[in-house]
Image 1: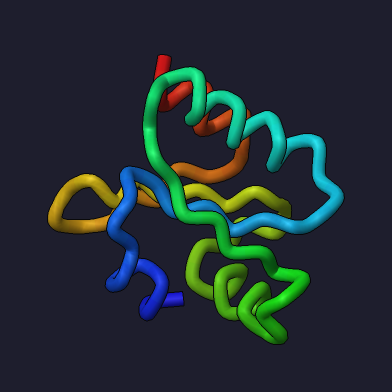
Image 2: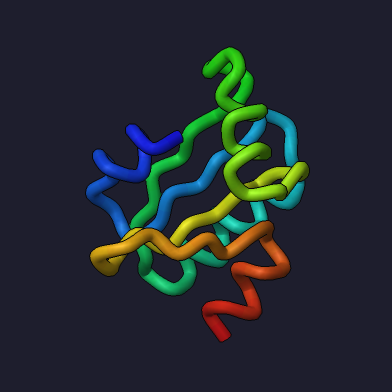
Length: 86
């Protein structure tokens, strides 16, 4: 997970899955706010999901981070993202 945080050059980093209403909702919110994001799909990344769960305690998707500052900020899921950006 750390490699994704370190190399991310967008406003947000989002871990997702292919068929996920909440992931789509999070992407739509970011798009509507004009914010860029890097999406990492757990379906294509082997055991990365369990690494993210271990690091964050967040078991559902999406898993969103604000990476605009010097230190990434763990946001949570799509509801948390909406509250964060309100």
